[in-house]
Each structure stands twice: as C-alpha cells, then as structure tokens.
View 1 (cartoon, rainbow, N blue to C red):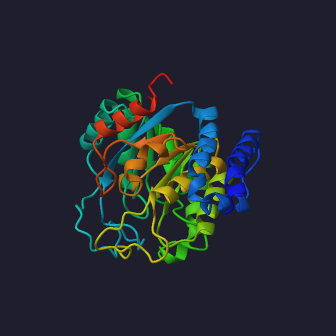
View 2: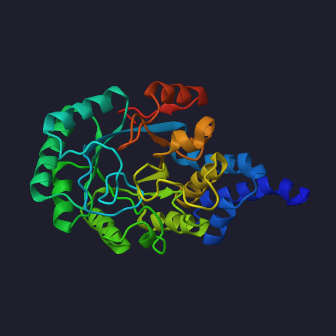
View 3: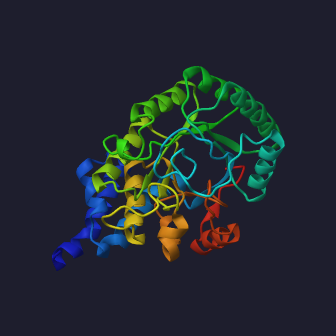
Length: 338
C-alpha cells in the first residue's frame, strides 16, 4: 500500500460508516475489503465501526450469563464441538439439569449484572419431556428475576417454537456457525437448511433471534462475509461472534492450516459484523480471551455485548476483569431499566 493510500484510508472507512448510518447495506466487496484491510488502518476502521455502534447503543454494554443445562450426549458430528458424538474431549456429561440448578444459574446471572440468561442444551433437539421442563423453569425465572431468557434448544419445529414463546422465552439462540458452502466441512448429520428453517420458526413464533458463528475453522474471508450478510437477512436481534478455541479430542483440536487468527484479524471480523448489522446486539463470544488477549477492550468499540463468566465447556476470565475493562473504557453496563 502506498503512502497516499494509507492517508486516504481513514476517510474511506468513515465514508462507509456514514453510508451505513444512512441505510446503506454492506456489500460482499466491502466486507472483503474490511477483512483484508491493512493493519495500519485498524484504528480508523474501529473508529468508523464505533460510530455505528454508538448511534444505536451508545456506550452501553449488554452482559450475558450462560448455563450449560445439558452437557455432551449429542448425536451430531460438529467438528468444533467438545460435546459431539465424534469428540473424545474430557468434559462432564449429564442430562438436563433439574429446575433448582437452572434457577441457581438465574440468580447468578442477576448477581453478575447480566441482562440476559442463556440456557443451553446439547443435542440435535430437545425431547418433548425436556421441552416441558424447560418451559416450566422459564416461567419461574420470569416470575423471580428481571432477566431476558434466551434458550438454545437445537432444531425446532413451529409447534415447539410456539411453546417456548408461550412460556415466556424472549429469544432463541441457534447459530448458523459459518457459510452455507463451508458448512458440510464442519457437520454432516444435519444441513444448513435445517438451521435456517429453525430460525424461520423462531421468527414466526414472535421471538427474538440470536444467531452467529465461529471464526477460525478453516473458512475463507469470503465465508465470513457471507455469514455476516446472512445474519442481516434475518435481522437478528443478537449476534454472537465466537473465535475457535481448539479443544483436545475434537476433529479441530489443531487450528486449521492457513492464516492463524490474530487479535488484529479478530477485530476486523467484529468491525465487519457491526457494519453489516448496524442495529444488532453484537456479542464477542467464546475465544475472546484467547484470541483478543490484551486487545479485548478494543473489541467493545464495534461490539456491545459479552458473556460474563464461563462458556459451554471452556472457562472465561473472572467477571471482575470484565467489570474493570468496561469501567476503564468509560462504558456502562446495561441495567434493568434500560
């Protein structure tokens, strides 16, 4: 890149932010330009993405608390997942937790200033008895706590989605994980359309959609851009961006060959998803601590949401570190009244 190009780049990113704020929909070419931009442009790119974030969310940060309500015992072959049938990872396995344990998690979420409580169950889909139990405990949570409840139940039919909506579930998480062309490389026991059908069922039931992906599984930048634009088609309310944490015992226990994830690339990914989905709650998910490292605070310039606490089968940093990071940025945690 020439010196002239470097000097003009800041204007180009802010021009793009201006157009996004005026309703422009990011194109595939623009998305690729974000991911392939020179590292020397990174701060200007983040500044542009922050302007879009600030317009819709100010300096507020939405905290989420997750409970792994059913671990392992999954019939699917997702290559990244320690809970899948092809995994040899040493993780706890247990059936759906009882109501008291899930309620304990809701109390922990409230104590950690989380706005959303995420109940995640492994497996292709919940059985009818499991779905009944989830519905019953969600009703109790909504009575006892001022929390939004997000459930990650696997694939859903229209009838099942309707039951979740009726019991008070605010949002359903079902990640697309990657682009349609790349999907068969990471899973063969169900297909991409199955996931799209579930998102459509969630929307028909009137619930919010939480859906995102995992970056670093061997996909190309074009795959990442395609996922970002797919999320826009569904107008998802929440979009978690995870960065692959290779887990020993899974098919992806070694990071795929190619360009390794760097903190700088991860920040470009977050900027891409913000510019493609300007009004969406953009969450930095698993892999935040590993891949952003000391640059984690910069991730909250495009993103406005994080998990506080652990993930499914991997640990997060202590919540106190998250609170200090948010305070140091001059940002504020979303409260019940927001």
